[in-house]
Length: 253
Image 1 (cartoon, rainbow, N blue to C red):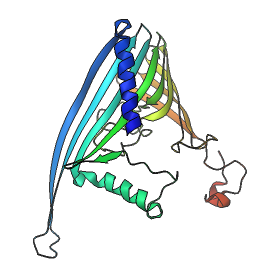
Image 2: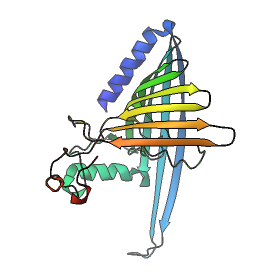
Image 3: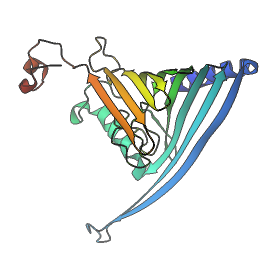
Image 4: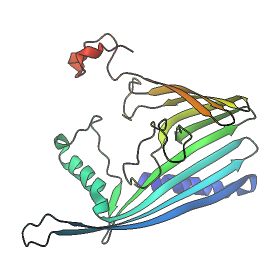
């Protein structure tokens, strides 16, 4: 928690000190949601159970246009949770106290929450990246999102970034990596991307993801083709059974 606050303060100070050379844009949104729930399982006193919850989410964003080609973007979420919206906090707390009771592939459990008298709060980074833009190409690197699909409601190709584990109502969680886009023509786009492993302490690169996507835009049809390559999480040519992997895969990739 403290390292995120110090990082944000450091970024603010640097942007303010260099404000005469860059164009700053501040924006964001705040969502307040409350829910009430009553179960019909009449137990004990025979009146059932009544539950409520409050989810107050703020997403704050800063964009700095540095010259004609370079942009810097940072955004973060502030969540205030009560009642039934604290389920994620409870799950992570119990996993911290009893790791064997919940599957934990990395061996590390983080509690990005703090406790106050009337709410459980959290402060987490949403996006943090540089974007370099040219006429026929773009490059983003940092904590980014890999978008997929073009639908307004249903996007079957948008599967790389998961739901934010801290607050499901927030934007999808960012991933550490890079994305390069090339525009060979006004109706086509080629995208190359790479993402770090979901295990942040992995040193050999196992679990990293690399992919390529091709998009074509015509008058009434939009097409997208994506290939995603996942580095296996066990060494090549090693017996998968010794690494807890199914023998049927033969560890081929």
